[in-house]
Every structure is written in C-alpha cells, then in structure tokens.
Picture (cartoon, rainbow, N blue to C red):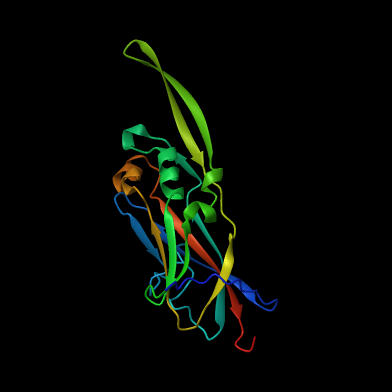
Amino acid sequence: MNKSLTKKVPIPKSARIKPYYDTKQIKNGVAEINFFPANATRKVTRDNYINNPFPGEDKRRIVGLSFELLKQFIHDDAANSIDSKQIINGIKDAGVVLTADNDYKEFLRTTIDRHSNFAGTDFAGAKATALVGGSVETVTATTAVLKPAGMYKLQDPFDVAPNQSIDLKVTFADASAFPTDTNWTDSSQGLLFLRATLYLAEIKAQA
C-alpha cells in the first residue's frame, strides 16, 4: 500500500509561513544525517525549533524545503584532502526522505539538488608560482564560492498535525569524499555544516 501523499493542498491566504531550520555537521564517513530530532540543541545559530513535534495547537502545512552549507567559501587544499568540487558533488547527489510517525507516512523522496543552490556554485581558480629546488613550479588552487538558498516550494504541500513527529533524513552515496575534522582544522577553514530549512504555513484550527 502506498502511503505517500500526492494530492496538492492549497495554502490559505490567512496562513503565516514560518521557516524552521536545523543544522548538522557533515562528517567524513557518516553517510546519514537526521534533521529535526525530538529535542533541539537550542542554539539560534544552529536551529530555531524547540522540539519535534512542533509546539502549539495550529495545524501546519509544509510548503517548502531548502538546504545550504554554512560556508561562503571552500578553498582547495590538496595537503589536507580538501577538494571543493568533490565535496559539492558529494552533497548535491545526496538522497532526501521526509517521513512522519516513525516512517508510517512518507511525504517526500527526492535528491538534495532539487532543494538547494549547490549546482550554482562558482569555482574560481588562482595560480601561484614559486621557486622550488631551483625550478619554477606553478600550482592552481580552486575556491568554491557558495550561494545561499531561498525557499524551494514543494510540488505537493502536505499537512502535519500538532502532535505529529517528522523525520528528515539525508543520505550521502559516498561520505568518504568529505574531509575529516582534522583536515578542516589543519586547513584553517573551520568545520562543514549543512542547514535544512522547512517552511511551514501555520493554519488556525478553524481554517
């Protein structure tokens, strides 16, 4: 039996659209990330939801979803196994599954590139020349310039009840493509974080 919801649901004009976001680190060798756990870390720089299910008595209609990296640049650094193109490609090819009630209902199954701006990443190259051992060597380094993501509307918005828990899972095909924490630290670039944002239309009970 197919429990997926495919019926298009309109958004009432009186509804208030509110973004809820959660941020997780992308780690070397970790193939799955689960967003929106039951209890948030309550750090506004990482997430702005309190718990899952979302609090309050209003029904919520999920109308949009987006993913973005909390970095502006990724600099190639071969000595520390940082390859910006490999990292971006490893992320944008990830699978996304959104379910509710402990996998009882599957609302969305897609790929992350349909809800992100990773495909629009600019890769800028720069050459450096140095005298090494009496010979001139030229090295080209690439910097990935990342772009923010807006709201990507769902083709089929769906409702979640006030007491209904959701699970948003991202699965990477090859998590070995990502640098280790030590790689990032030694490269002085900071760790890599992915933010997932759900856009919820809050609907009053009488609507």
